Image (cartoon, rainbow, N blue to C red; front, side, top):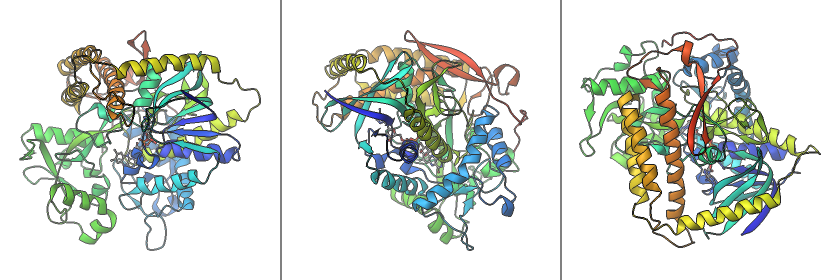
Length: 582
Ligand SMILES: Cc1cc2nc3c(=O)[nH]c(=O)nc-3n(C[C@H](O)[C@H](O)[C@H](O)COP(=O)(O)OP(=O)(O)OC[C@H]3O[C@@H](n4cnc5c(N)ncnc54)[C@H](O)[C@@H]3O)c2cc1C
């Protein structure tokens, strides 16, 4: 086993991880040695698939926008579960990020008078989503990756899978990794760490996310005894393509698309008359399922999936080609359907993890429900929960969050590392841990039990789709909990078919399935306990929000292998909770 030593280790090379690396490098003037560990090639990180854009107030004087309005929209969108001080950090920081990307060469779409174009997005009062056609994530990632490549103090470990964090009395020491190409194990030691491993929507079967969105960093933190926050809040994006789940960006509605039921009605008028198709995602997803349940949906012939229609046929074809080229391409290539001429079949699919690793406003990972924050470990991006999205994220606020907390955590970690008297990683403790971890991974490789891990994954995802979806009820959630327990038991007796070292994606999948199972249980446990409806958690038996008893964050910890829930206060600064009407 090779041992490598760094000042800062960043786990994840999406928008949050790369952004953190660049700002840590810049603030330290290239003096700290940084490792980026990523299970994919960095440019295949899920951020490349972000489509619609990044929110931020740019021209407030011209379009009557303001930071206060962006904050209000976000807090209302969150169903009052966002921490309001953190939301202010998000909206204050977002404009700077758009300009930063502009300086790195991102080709933002522009208006005729050469301003950065901003399109409308769900739940936003003013069009404030900057975009590069419908390939925003790709352009942002390209700009960041090119910048990272120019930095001599940053090493990237592409296709290295982290199996464990090495923690010693609330101090981060490094991580244990496996080179997927060769199977070689590596111990990475670091005096500080940033976890930026993205979301966990692969806990569900129908999802807009990549196969890699398996919540590894969240599960690693949970297993290391660190608290998770608000995991029951899973965002369902209203418009995933039927039957694959590929995302049809909200920008399609931002550019004027209609949602129609089987009667050809724009049904959103019954659910959000003032915002219509640009209501927040939780509301539209519920509206779609309600329409389907009321018999006003359509059925996809091949898959039998019920759905509604997203109609772009009334839009100028030039607009579709210029602003939604990828959507057009996806529809033509995967369905043989041209959105210029035919409406697109869509339904809600799991899309985003609102919860994640419990952190403070600086992105520092908390050691317990109420702290203290860890001195040398941060989290950024979708895997962290600051929390700015609360119970429901507004579209385009994630790329802002990744960028703002990428910067904050990168600067925070570098500033910490440049202090003289920091405590250093404990090499002998870490070596001992790594030996144990190597044995554990080699042991998994030898698994020769009777259960197929892929069947377990399939059952887990089906259970989550069926019982932990857009609407939840007590019987379904209890069923999910039981089923997940059975699957955990079965997972103890699986086989790993591929016993080789080289590109053993079978072994990697097994590790990911283990992570997904743990997180599914945490999602279910938090949801069962939350006796109200808020944002993405819609409980049939209790459809009202209950601020008196439930305006609080759920904290989940792993205590001796059992999930222990507790609660933390939501920070309210200026905006008192009110009924959410759109
Ligand atoms: C299809 C789609 C479109 C979207 N469009 C938008 C949009 O337009 N605007 C918006 O605001 N949001 C959008 N979102 C959400 C947004 O894209 C994501 O929340 C965001 O990109 C997440 O970035 P991240 O840096 O946190 O993680 P990711 O980009 O997911 O990167 C995670 C990184 O962690 C690494 N990693 C994970 N586990 C391990 C491990 N065990 N070992 C080593 N490395 C590991 C991966 O290799 C990867 O580099 C979209 C989401 C989807 C699914």
